Image (cartoon, rainbow, N blue to C red; front, side, top):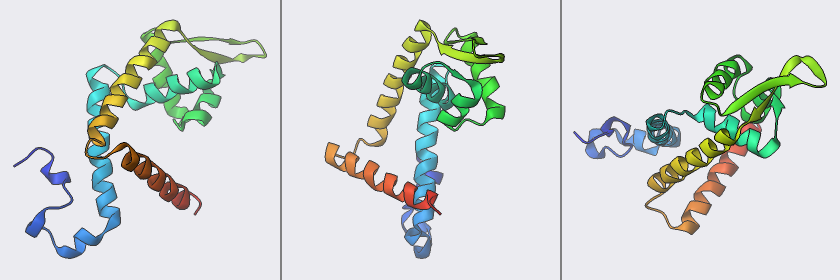
Length: 157
């Protein structure tokens, strides 16, 4: 049996035809494969997706409170403390008092954090190349565009 065979959508004659016509099944199985590939690549360098999104938000928006980082990243506030603890343990972020409100912390990315973000960018660029390997640049742009439209449509209710 080939690797990830359970995640293949097109199992030939081994699957009922009506399953092969279900878009939700196709996209769900594809998403599971994509998440597995990204998770394995990030795990190989001791990271996970929350590390990447928090560092990316800090790089783009600058120092921020934990609550603001949650808003920027979609990481639940209840999970943000653990993510920041991991990033702080690695020296990627620092916590400091907010000069405007001493009751809260401001999170700042360190120089080591900027280097880590660049490393994670490279890892995820490799993931994207692996996932989108069979497609031309134009097709990759089209996939992003169409999935973005679909996501916006579904998110709008």
